[in-house]
Image 1 (spheres, rainbow, N blue to C red):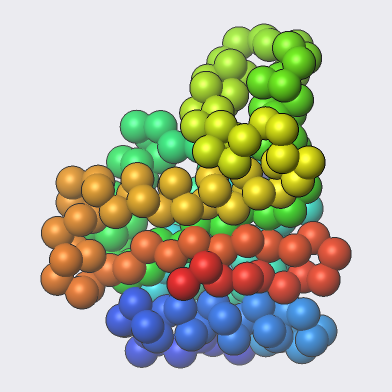
Image 2: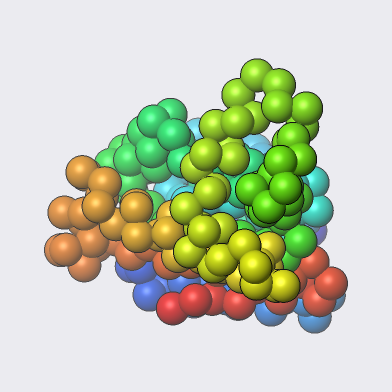
Length: 205
Ligand SMILES: [Zn+2]
């Protein structure tokens, strides 16, 4: 498969449409893009990505695949439960300022291990990942979304996944360098939740 992508995706609306369409192609089993070396070579001398997709490190959520995107189409940033830090914010800033992306899509997913572990830790003192190294940073950053939902809620982990997406989107809207672009209508930040079972992405727009 050597299809090249439409180079005319340059607005937030067009970028969002392309990701919605790509997810549909993925779910229906009709992907347009393989990941062969010809596509790599086609973009070797330049790139004009339309979006930055920011998701979890979870091995079941490969972002280029679930949105059926080719080489050069999307920038990808990932961390546990898409927790932000300065490096990630700087990378997102870079993708907007230097690479010209017009959409930042934050993708949470069902049964997110990091969110579930945080709920368990806050409920009863279970440790997360043995509490080694910087794992505690993830828990600290995810705790506000969990508390927003409430620890007593039976469905707290799944609701916290959504709350965490909404919080990440809200936080990015206020980032210097992004907020001005959003204000001017050149960039949008949108949230989404991926369903591991069906492959569908629900856009929270
Ligand atoms: Zn996850």
